[in-house]
Image 1 (tube, helix red, strand yellow):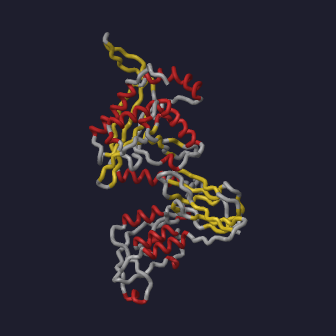
Image 2 (cartoon, rainbow, N blue to C red; image 1 turned 135 degrees about the vertical axis):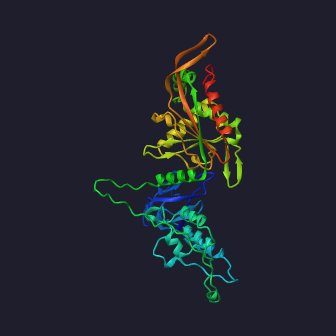
Image 3 (cartoon, rainbow, N blue to C red; image 1 turned 90 degrees about the vertical axis):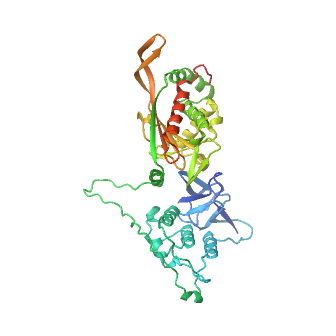
Length: 437
């Protein structure tokens, strides 16, 4: 018999870790090559990890809700033939690394021991706690957002960030160190884990948020707390675009086998405007502004279960309208079928959301951090409007919509935010109706 280390595979250029969401196979189960062993989540995308070999699972090294780094061994599979290979537990490796990183106190060290706790903490959480000098008592008091109230990586990182003072120094367990009294900071009070609410009348249904909804909730609250949101609105006459699309959509579908929606037309205009106003294509990190080289447009999409995901069109300004239409359709279809890859949602520099899909005239969308702007597309409506002509003004029926631009007032002032959305409107109202698709 030989033992094979199943490692968390690389899932995208910018993806460094994933959260275990479900073990499809358990210890003792046999598995075929390319059969799914475990399901993982990166940001908002769920992925399956298949086995590279056939055999039997003899050890599982991480639990559900544990965060695993790309390349770490997550399970041991016993295969037929060959000599057994020695395998090291990732938890053991984490422990070794934690010991190596202990803090020197009076030239002596001692190690915080989490074995006395009755709560379950993942190896990664314990490692962070040791590195940051978080005591067992502090760790047990953190309100976990993981399954069954478990403390996740984000929970402990948020705690460390907000506790506001030097945590307890970490020292190794040696006789000489026993006389050294480490300085203990007063931990910031953390709220206890909220118990499931109870229906008073016995008729209300209590439903826990799923993992994605919890992540969306956290991301939205974080964005509001981070950015000073301000909005600009502008009404756009898209009559010519509507007429052109009605004329060309049949030709496009017959030739390319795909539908021509309004979205790629709007995305094209946004990409052009970002090229004109590069200070809208930035992110903020502390007191620094990062000017993005590429224009990567996020496209907010509603999922069948009601959740939201934002796949990204990379280098959107380099695509012609046909390329943009194909990219939009591909990402939208794969989002609905749950087939997006982790890298499909990474690297966005600006986001567009279509609130008009549900009949909304305009909206005030929340910025997708760490970006500094997001554009909401309102519903296209037939409205009476004043039409100016050389012969005079008259009232006519026009197709109009609102563009709602939310931007981060920390770095984007009204002049830039308003000029940007005005430029998008200019590109839409001056759309070339003689162009081919």
